[in-house]
Image (cartoon, rainbow, N blue to C red; front, side, top):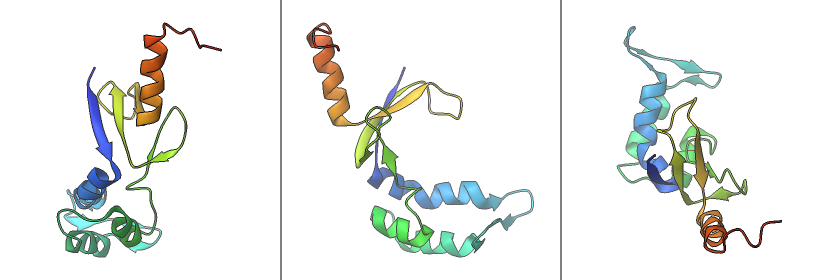
Length: 118
């Protein structure tokens, strides 16, 4: 099973393309709407941030942190970077996001053969 690196920065870099894939209605050649209105102006603002936008700038344009937020599935803390472990990421995949601290704890547990398990 693959392991993929991801960070707030990589999510920010992908935000404009992901926004377009989510909200551009291809069959009607038009932009969809959210409760906040038409999604096309947001897309234009994301493009204006450039190829390597700051995650906080992306959050400001979109109006929330959901497009750049990463959370470790083990410790439930918001993180700046981590790895996806498991099946190819999909809505029904068995995949988890892990931070460096939790990965290190897992390695230590394996190294110690689980001697410190509670």
